[in-house]
Length: 344
Image 1 (cartoon, rainbow, N blue to C red):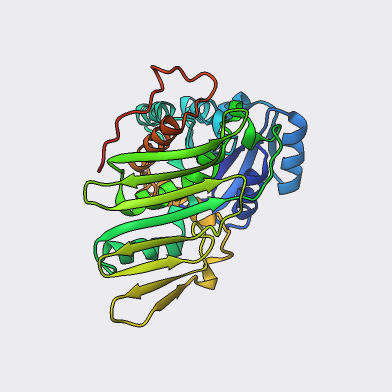
Image 2 (tube, one colour):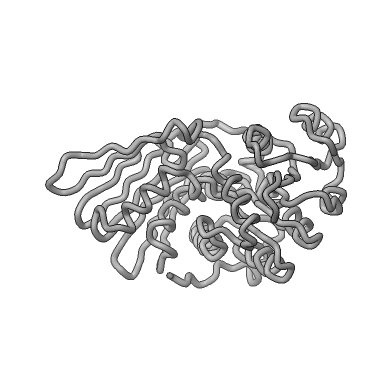
């Protein structure tokens, strides 16, 4: 792809779409050229807010727009398979929000579709593109704390959310796990790969979604990860990685940290802080920049957010849901049963 602005289409007009678009319009090598919603009025309002030339009240119209380099899919995850699939079928490159899909089967279908079309596809796991998280992973990979023994991560919101809220709606893939738990699971698997075994417990709502879930992931190496998510209690949103020779603590907001502390046996603690030049800690521009870098390089997936890793996370989320008894409408017990985990 030539060194011109990458032309983005935005599919959906909710809060995360607005946050991502706000960052895109400030990037000199990005251009937001179209937006689509199921409502023309919503698409028009979004287009006016961000100065977008074309607004569609129909996802199909956006998919048919040939003047787009990549589509950002920001619907609730229950619609990711349909929305991202529609764009991939039309030959578009796609950045799709997390959780990538409802289950591993749907995720596999999107990956197969992208491969068949030769299109770029990436999960919008912005944490993996965060410069400080990349620094943390590099330290772990380089053996700064020895062999990883345990990972801990949590993400909880205080709520309360009424039954009408999307986080309580099974039809929208509600519950803590897919919306929030995907972060602790993804953090653990960034460092350890896919677990060999999963145990989990949850408190379920009257609608049948998880209000809070705790899981213990284990690896053949003996490593463990304790992950927790909740929509009924605000947690510290912290993480730690313990190794045979030290520990790394991320004190708050682990998926978009402003700092972390490295403790190495026999040494003084070392604090690593975010570079102010990287922008606000909640900036989504790092994942946008990675998509545009990959497109210009002719890549069909990102080495920072590889599709195999996304599929592995979806298998773990399926396994957790299987253990706690959460099933969404339309999931057949035989067809969508949690698959066997395949540790890396």
